Image 1 (cartoon, rainbow, N blue to C red):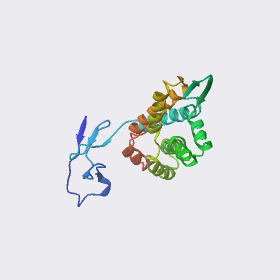
Image 2: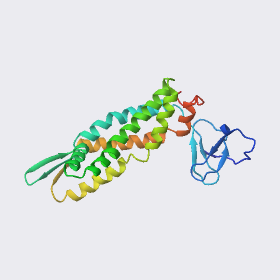
Image 3: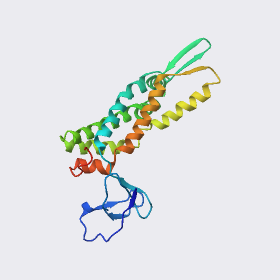
Image 4: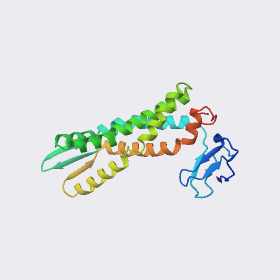
Length: 219
């Protein structure tokens, strides 16, 4: 059930009692809420946060699943192409190497960063943050890794790369014999797990848990 926060005079309030809407910048007093309740901005309806239980354990499970999917998604064949008696298997990594060998080194570096390096670095940062909260150890480093993760969020573009793969499949299907590889299934699964993780890993609760203020995040 959604609840709307109520704007109140802020002159005598402690800053810890305030929250700002990320969509319209309205400054509000933090409303009372129950676990599982969704809090919305009264002006624009943007979700301020949803207070969930066991956020850390659920997020850790998703991060581990994503890390397990990372290697097959990037190194198993995405598709097998047969043309004029010759057969080739393409992976994301072989695509990066192909761009590099063909002289397009800047594009190869960009594809490598956005489709492989940065998504992996994001997952490792998330794993380090969640582990620091779960083990109650090194939370100052957890804060650092969470800030790094937020700086990297806009650079990992797996969905754009997936669209490129789907476009290539549609164009090639009439030109050659094409079969889908296991790598594509792992890549789609990795993308879905990361989206699920973004929804589950509530930023408001992660910041509070790193500060030791949220008792529901890991229980």
